[in-house]
Amino acid sequence: MLGTERLSHLLCLPIWFCCALRCIDGLENGLAQTPPMGWMPFERFQCTVDCIHFPRDCISESLFKRTADLLVSEGYAAVGFQYLIIDDCWMERIRDTSTQKLLADRKRFPSGMSALSRYIHGRGLKFGIYHDVGQQTCMFRGPGARGHFELDAQTFADWGADYVKLDGCYATESERNRGYPAFGKAMNRTGRTMVYSCSWPFYTEKPDYRLIAKHCNLWRFAEDITDSYTSVFRIMELYRRNQELLLAHAGPGRWNDPDMLVLGNFRLSYDASRLQLAIWSVIAAPLIMTNDLETVRPEIKELLQNREVIAVNQDLLGMPGKCVRASKYFQVWVRPVTPVNDLGQHSFAVAFVNRGGFDACPLCPRNFEVVLERLGLDSPTGYYVVDLFNSSSNMGMFKPNDAFNTRINPEGVTFYKFTVAPLY
Image 1 (cartoon, helix red, strand yellow):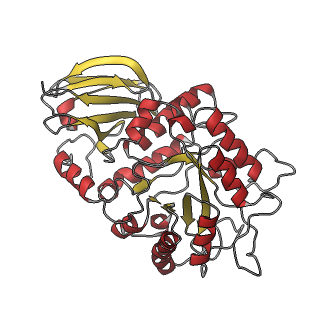
Image 2 (image 1 turned 90 degrees about the vertical axis):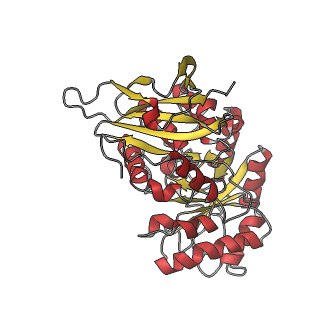
Image 3 (image 1 turned 120 degrees about the vertical axis):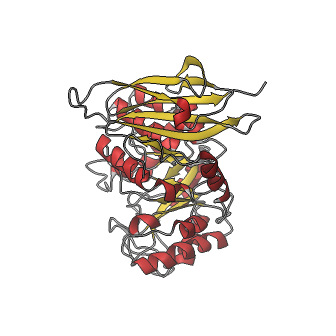
């Protein structure tokens, strides 16, 4: 792992690039060539099923229709947030007694899932749904897929699903190791292409990411996120400690999933919101919001719809980034992105993180300075630099031996694109 102030452990960038490009064979449904973007309810709305006392927060067709409308009317769909994904707590507790098919809760989804799917598609969005590989769902609200893989996959296809999230509660490890590939194959046999989101590695002590990447478009590797800087940073650290393994198997069509974006809720500060969005973009994570789109503050909405940051996340090279420097107080995260110059050298998105905790002033802004070539930015043509959170701020040209200085708020981030200059 990286030392706290040493640069000698930096991974050789050409080796990193080759690995990222070569490790993309496996699941070939043609989907998720860039990380999926969309919305899910769970962290914000949990498993609220009391529609009498909590009608706005209740997991119901009303919530999903409202959110579908807001994704479009508030501009989120226009910047790429296209998947509206139902999480746990949508089911009746038992299957249909005659057909054994899954049933949506009749009181909360009176029109049924086919009708809700048509509504979502009618707004130009894509429809996603939750299931579990085991005996029942994680919140005890419905039956799992055990013994019904073919039937349930076909049911989702018949409903017009574009995305399936398969959780892993109430199953043994051997059942998961068999069940995740089997359910994916059942999905393929329906003839309908559906993004396949697996929670497989989260439930496995030593995940086989080679196998997981063969069968899944994305996979949860971290615990459920909560609305706090502590949770965001804990997931960042989990990625950083395992990044060589996680990088080796991610790329177009298969992505590491650190869980949802919690921007726009109750607790995450503006600076921590910028931090999560920047790091999720550097590591090429799915950008799946979990919030009430009616109450998102204007400054957070502006972050979520930042086209320059989204472009980093959706970069067509599909090469996830990593933490290349870590100390007690600072981290630097780097991702290779387009454009590439005639020398074959990449542009980069670079996030500078201030962890806080300084003795004299634990929560003060701090300056950070580094020579660019020490971060692997070594193109002799140099780089044009733009602040991704202030795209009108053109910072000029920097050469590899130039020092770059940035001032970072505590528990926050600064985020830049270093666009490689062409060879004239």
